[in-house]
Image (cartoon, rainbow, N blue to C red; front, side, top):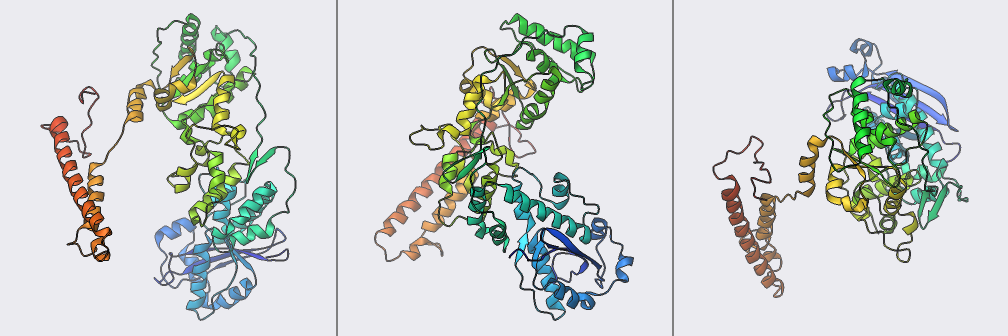
Length: 555
């Protein structure tokens, strides 16, 4: 790849996923790019010579009657083959379009294309680390790329070409040490996607002022926060004052205004007696308690809000509090607090970059995190919006709450969780969740704060879940059974047969067999005792388990 390379950005619409199973192409779309500009577009309908599934018709909007008049693939294959020769093949999910197209070429007697190929899905996963969906329509919407006809090959190809251009620009805008770190890990990417990054990487140059580098990591520089003083303001006591303050951003609600007054009066009293409020749907309870507390909460006497879920917690920080601050015309210093495991440990992540022969999944996640660290100011892994955080890498790099000391942790001053703890002191509002409040209230280290338990009807259940420990005895028995078979001389695949001439291993396997037998018997006895103690005479629920309250379980 060089400055003169022509990129063929291709999208196919097909009747299915496998040429061998009889599926065929129904539309070919291609946008040729050179020097970052689209120089030619090609759109061609193809007669599949077979029926098109109704689901495909609905997805693509292609009428079978239009396809009947289109040429067969055999008639256009040579032209397409010549068009793509000596280009770099690009697709959104390249491991579908490229093999499918080559299979079609082979079917009609042409040789497979031998092209370098790039996948824009992986590029987007790396360079847009906080995006939750990498479907082409979602990416084009996020990046404001015009995409008039999703799932039509010509429109998809042009949109993918524009996507590639934007992703390349984002890569080249990264700090150059981050670019080089991504290039160094590009071998794990699909096909020649890593080589593409190498080809467009910029030479090393000094960091811009907004970044700081320690070891292999480049992070966004977070300005040093200072203790703020809050100008006193009078609470809008009358309905007229509330209307004047809230409109036009909010609609005035009489019931909400009464809730505000009740909360403000309770905060002014300052007594230990709790205030319980049942707010109906549509009342606007969040604003109903945030606004009055905004007039009394300070860094010295904080408001702690505990929500029922992490989603509601994030909504408060990202939407509700900033909007209220705009209404009030002043800042409302707020901090979101979660348990340490939600945050990245920079020292552990830096160490993970040196491990030998990481898996492809690990390399992809490391690249994603390297880009994310140039953007995040919190280090909260939830910002990645992954469907699962069970990858082995996350087990290595999650924070435990121990930031170490400056002498043993080169990232001590940049450590996100340590900075979070420090930011609590400066904040007037601390937003957390039921589980954290019940388990880690001591970590907040606050004296007599204002406390709002939002969605309080879920607090008991969330607290019980936070302290619950689940043990799957059936799963343990299955694992023990597997170990027993490995150490049983009568089993065909037993390790005893493998080590039959090893005098040291045979006694060890015999002991393992005896211990697993004892453990299985013990678990079976335990299961019977638990059943008799808690469930004897009770009917199990449809879900296959019985739920007991703490009182019923005598806990």
